[in-house]
Image (cartoon, rainbow, N blue to C red; front, top):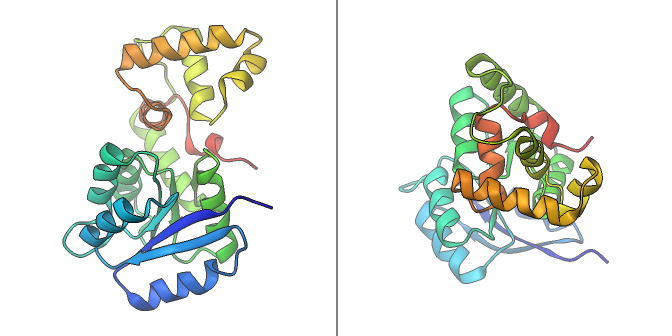
Amino acid sequence: MKKLIRVLLVDDHPVVRKGLYACLDRQEHLQIVGEAGDGQEALVKARELQPDIMLMDIDLPGMNGLAVAEVLQREQPQIQIVFLSMHGEREYVMRILQSGARGYVLKHAPTEELVQAISKVHSGETYFSPEVAKVALNQIVQNQGIQKNGILTDRENEVLVQIAGGLSNKEIACKLGVGVRTVETHRERIMRKLDIHSAAGLTRYAISNGLVVLATLQSP
């Protein structure tokens, strides 16, 4: 039996929340632990209920979803955020990537895609709707191209790309043909050089520097 994934629903439209609840509550491995209608309430509920996943709209009264995500990244980084929005424009996509969210699903997506996004993010992967991934990829290629930074060594760049892909130290070691301890050392050096100390932070860095694109972060 799959471990229950505890989900907090955040949307300012009660009808949307009820619709999401009705769709997701049918999934045996999902448990809806609460709902919130604005940003401030979302923070209160997140601190109180400690969900695994927060499924959240961007456009919220008072404090928008991006601001909520920034606060949670500092206070409750273990809570993973999947944005659910009608916006697929470039500016929204890039801002969401920078916010630390691990998933972004458009509101017209089918229930199956939403469930897949929640499951993938909970397992440590990322998920972005295909349209969103395409927008982000085009923007990265236009602005920066796929290029290496000058801070890390070639091997450290290789390890960083694998970390961004959600691989464990053991999996990276097998893929690169090195020892686990070697990968651990590279990871430590990468975090020290970049002053980034979480896998989510390293993933954002890899994306923003063109080392990896969203399409490569999604499983087939």
